[in-house]
Length: 352
Image 1 (cartoon, helix red, strand yellow):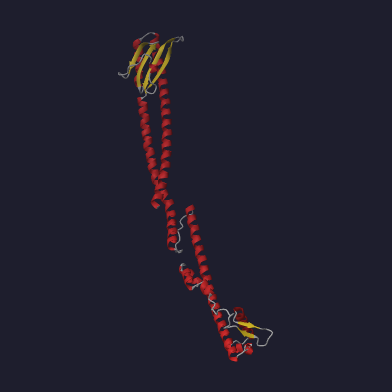
Image 2 (cartoon, rainbow, N blue to C red):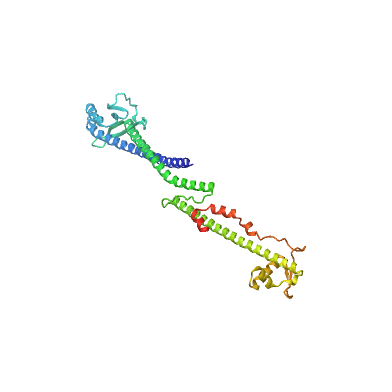
């Protein structure tokens, strides 16, 4: 489970970083292409205006050689392919930087994705239009520059994703390990019923707060179990005392019965005689035992008659004579021992 949770969390973080990196790369690619196109257009506009200014005098005097020399400036421009001085559809002079390029009759019909075409009018000092300068620039070099830049951005995005993966692994390990330790402690407690195991609390984050609360819950359970063990132990002591009291009552009843049978009549025994026989000096103590015997059904007392004691032992309406063992049934010593064994040694000593 530890590896699965850590891997799942790391994959999710890496996926998020990958999405962010791809989004950044896409945005950069769009911005780079737009910027490159805008720069290429501005460069073409500057170039065609420069050539128009250069050939203006040659066009005014119809000097074809001068026109061609002016168009030679095209060689200094990056991506320059072809330039010409045209009047209508007629080409007065041209200059091809790329010999393999064959211009169409109307250069403005070239594919704008591959070629950058600019055409500007040549005017005389009087303002009359004497012709046009047409410049054709290839976008291949521009596109190659953009692709190189995009490739570099892709490599940078890959490096960022790799670093993000390492960061995600360490973050996942830091988050998952405390949760895993807490799960291990919980599983151990469930499988062994041993409340002595406690989770380790490290830090002050939410996971540490959860571990701290779980530890306090375990300690509260131990205290509750210790209190229950003490209550069971006290109940067992009370049961033994009740059992001893029941045995004493039975002995008193047997003695009274024997004395009554020896005297051959029920009224032959006095309260003081019973006390002397049982070693009880107080008549109130004897009366308390007699009241208890009457409540249990062993004798019947007549308070208005001297020596008014009737023994019911042996009669058909007498209850069974049984020892009072309710405490042993409620809290047998084995249950007390099992409860004490589930506690740490310090709390067992306190319960005892």
